[in-house]
Image (cartoon, rainbow, N blue to C red):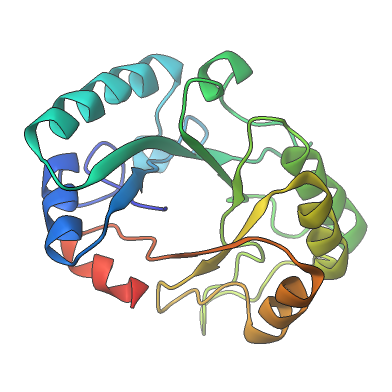
Amino acid sequence: LQIQTDWTDGKDSIEAMAKEAKKQGLEYIVITDHTRDLAMTGGMDEKKLLSQMQEIDKVGKKISGITILKGAEVNIRKDGSLDIADEVLSKLDVVGVSVHSNFKMSTYDMTARIIRAMRNPHVDILFHPTGRLIQKREAYEVDMDAIIAEAKKTGTVLEINAFPERLDIKDSDIKKAVEAGCLMAIDSDAHAEEHIGYLK
């Protein structure tokens, strides 16, 4: 449920990623390229996102045996708002949200920021909930107990990001989330065909 393509910072096309996922036995994938605020990745605005949705439909007609869903990895701004308009979010099959900037906020402010994003009715999944990059960047300060409680309340899925540099959220938080009855998604966060296997 998290795949980046050459529409933003991924290496391979939608079609290549779908074919590889099918080869690996997956029944469905969601294309979740980055959105506007991540300019360095070629992040998509509403117009580009709508255009990608049409491309996904085209590719979906060409490849049988796998469902290609339309999604986005939407940026959570400092105030908890999202960088894509609700009107366009409502057209996506899956909306993932994540923090990509302003990592040095207080625990209270970071938690409030993420909770505000989770309360958007279009949001389905919170991607890499603590933002850690193993041996590169510590997790930002966030109250995971509050995030887990909010996920349960809003029905927001919490991601277990299987990309080796992330492995986010950590095992002890996964256990808490499972015990709280939260839904979880194990995602590859693939940016290239060879990353899809991280799911396993």
